[in-house]
Structure formats: C-alpha cells, structure tokens
Image (cartoon, rainbow, N blue to C red; front, side, top):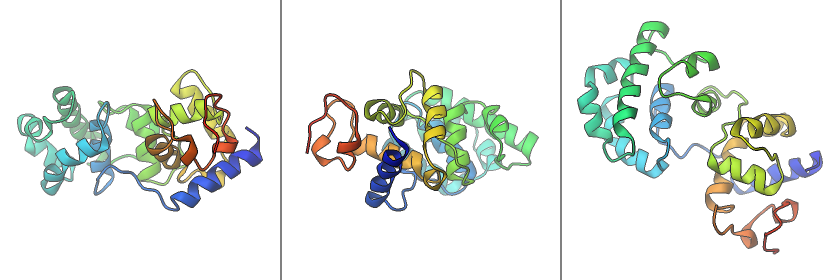
Amino acid sequence: MKKADVDEFFRRLKARAPAPKSELAYHNPYTLVVAVVLSAQATDTGVNKATKELFAKVRTPQAMVALGLDRLKGQIKSIGLYNTKAKNIIALSQLLIRDHGGKVPRDRAALEALPGVGRKTANVVLNVAFGEPTMAVDTHVFRVSNRTGLAPGKTPLAVEQKLLKVIGAQWMDHAHHWLILHGRYTCVARKPKCTQCAVNDLCAFEGKTTV
C-alpha cells in the first residue's frame, strides 16, 4: 500500500472513530495491566464483567496482594484460564511492589519481565497508559493488516514491525485502536462486512465484496 493510501486509510478510520479508547475498563496503569492480562483468549466484555466488582476495591498492587490468590480466583473465575491468570497477577503485583515501588514502569523490558505480560500486553500499556507510539498486534490487527495489504506478515512481530514502518507518526497515537475496532466490527474473521467498509477501495483482499 502506497504512503498516500495508508494516510487515506487511517484518515477514514479516524472519521468513524475520532477518539477511540480501549474497550477494557480500567482506572489507572495498574488496573490496565491486570485487565489486559485477563483479556488473553477472552473477550473485553467478559473481562469487564469480572473486573467491575474487583476494581471497585482493588486498584493497586498492594491491595491485590492483600486480596490474595484464592479470593482473586473467586472474582475472575468466569474468565478462561483464570487459575493461571490469577497466579500471574499476584506474582506481577508482588514484583511491582518489590522492584518498582508499586508503580507500573514505563519501560518495555521491565513490563515484559512481569509474569503474564508479553510483548502485546506491554505495547497496550505503553500506548494506552503512557501515550507511547507502539503497535499492539492482536488477532484483529493481524487479520486486518494481512487481509487489506496494509502490512502483511507471517507473525505478529513481523506485522508490528511493518506497521511501525508504514504508518505515519500523525496516526500512531490511536492506530492500533482503529485497526482493532475495524477488525472487531467490520473486517471480521468469517464474513467481512465489505459493503460497510470505509476503506473498501483501498483494500487488497481478493475476496472482498465491492460497494
């Protein structure tokens, strides 16, 4: 996709969602980390239902450690893989207290050193909590990038690196949210809604339905 087409691509997505935000509910960088860890292989809606009561009383690593593993499991048992996720959340909370004074670090390596936090989660936290121009590649971003021809790649890392190269700086604050929303609601996995697509004419998908 040519640079002018990439700019037009994001100009149209911005027109549909001028100020996109994460659909995960959170209150501060710490609760954002917890929410993103919980969202692995789960829907944002499901995570939000589970964290509504949890975040009403737990918004710091100290409060999470005080809550304890068993009570945390009880709060998030509706979420898939909740046993492993609960253990990771308690462990990362302990590390935040021990190594970072209870604060979420604004540093990729430090974030990825936390249990349950991979590159995608670190990118989400850096972008959403701290405004860093990062690109979190989830299944939606991966699909849209490959299907449209925006940034084709065989792995999430390859797609991330290509997106960072082709997307102009003026779009980076919200680019990953625009791509997520487009993949979640329009460029869906099984039957993309091509006739409702704002970037239909810019898309390289051979199976698309023209407007």
